Image (cartoon, rainbow, N blue to C red; front, side, top):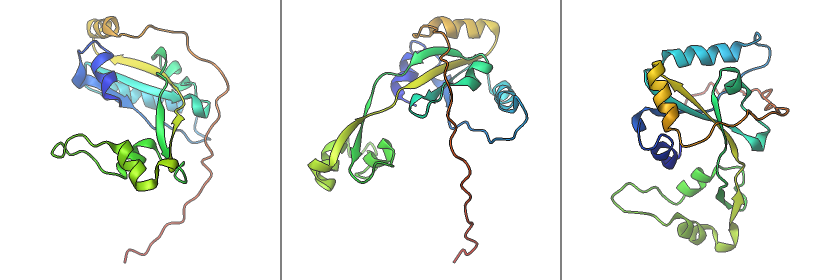
Length: 182
């Protein structure tokens, strides 16, 4: 999760208690409400107080209906953002592309990854692309007083839930296991 969100979302408070829920998926054929039941049970097991943030990707026509069904607070779309891409590597995530030229370990200082990308792949092959915006949801866990305090600190305004037709991922691909280890 973006460091800036952790620092600013609750005005600098609860920084060690903000977590992101990501990669939530469900297979077809499960009983009705199975996903919302699963999410609500998991949330009850978490330590208190805690703030959970999650996103639904507009680029995949997701609206966050599971968060709406479990009463999360919708706070609008994430900020516009552009990612660096390399021609021929469009299927890779921006972070993976940037990691191709190294990671800062704190000892070598700040890496100019864009400069290194251009040197490695050629300036004409490095370009920027608009990242799809995400629907942003928050969920507060704790006593009534703790939840009320976290909500009062939240810098985002509550907005009406987004609506539309979701498009599900195709999960029909079956892998062939490789049983040979050596």
